[in-house]
Image (cartoon, rainbow, N blue to C red; front, side):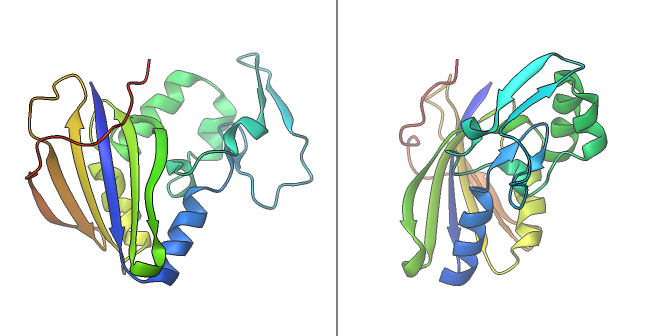
Length: 182
């Protein structure tokens, strides 16, 4: 199951800017957040799994959940996809980070920041509960809908400071435009 998610954050311009900047921080699955790691080379090899990656491929992301709840180094050092997926499911509630993330509205000065992204397997409720604790002054409003069943009404959930504020069917007929991840 793939879910289209529209995440609207509301709060002060200062808090929204901190969230946006942290969300877009470059991240490497084998190195963690890359800020302050300029001493490292841009090409890395994970010897155990024989995967070569170029860190620059991660620099265009606008929303990476690893920047809020990162995979621990002990999991990263194991270097196996199954281990990463197990950790992500246990700690985020789904596998992978935000797929195809875009910023729909960067209205930080007006107190709103809106993202669109896809999650695989389930909605980002567990993750939003945890991330909202890191930003207690922001309201996290997420509408989500199964891409494979567009006729169903979307659901919404809202979190504030780690607490579920609302969880119900959304009022609109469908979410706008996240593309299928194949």
